[in-house]
Length: 499
Image (cartoon, rainbow, N blue to C red):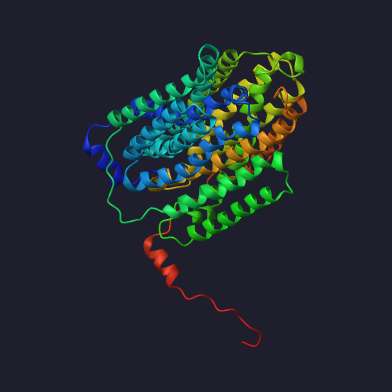
């Protein structure tokens, strides 16, 4: 789908547009910041459990805090980018993310680490902004490959995050991880500022949906806090029921508000479009499953000693190198995924990625303790993630106009992060249920249960993806005139017997 000529022409006329390589490289660097800040913590979790003497449920909030803020930031940042300029908003987001890294670095307590991680979560806005900038500044025929490479760059971050985190833990401490993240965010902000063309957007009188952006994380936080506490207080406790009840109630109020506010933070009416609804559903299922839940149990398989029956006995550095190699292998398939999406449609690539990630799980379960089979499985997982992440933005681009790219991509980022938060909370509950209080080690039955949980949601995501259409009907947002006309229509009166 071509972008509106007016916006692209004005951008090109301001100054000579950088080439494909420059734009994509800078946007990949920016997205690496966001994905790195998430992936770097998975290797670190076992160390934080030992250093702060906490259980898996507690330390999981180092990941969950980031994802919760990221969920709201993805939508809010995408909306702000479409309204006020994507380049400008991305620079601000990257600077704030860097400050969050400094808070975690200098705080010294688990509470301050979690606070810093929450601040870092604003980087969740980067992906939606990056897709919007790519579609805005790249030639139309090169957009599928560009967004595929940007979307799959999470694999580079996963590779670098795992390696750097493992190396820092072995030779220094977890503090070095946050120092590196702060520097990376600063470099990315400078690259975006100097190499991405300036914004050319029309002034708007629309007011941001502050209430909607506040209600959403409250609802999600309450639900996930209830899930994470359930292993200690039980599902029948007042605390669990109360938190879940508050979360659901706030979520219902949020939906009611979003359907009535003039400029919603999430345009829920986009879900009337069949393709968008199915993409979002498949995304959250995959995020609860293999996308969001694979990292923690797979790191336990890597780093636990062979004596436990399923561990491979890798050091933190070795585990990081292993994750780095398999992730980079997957990323090599990103350009191919983009070309295949351009030629055969993003649907086929998306389904292939989900199938690969799902098939990996039974391979791991059936070959516990076998290094060769684990290497093969995780390599296939890296390829599956690359294809899935690369196909997702192309699926959305096929269904939305250019002017709403960042908003829709930000919504998808929110959906994925909510799913990943759920995966982290439920995964932590499953693992904590099988954790030895004395050694903090998780039994094989717990790791197996975690993988089975991921398998179920992986299968569900494939089933939903198969319902996607090869040639979807694009979503056409409601105009101001259409909205006013809809609101002016009188409500239909109920028909009574005898009328």
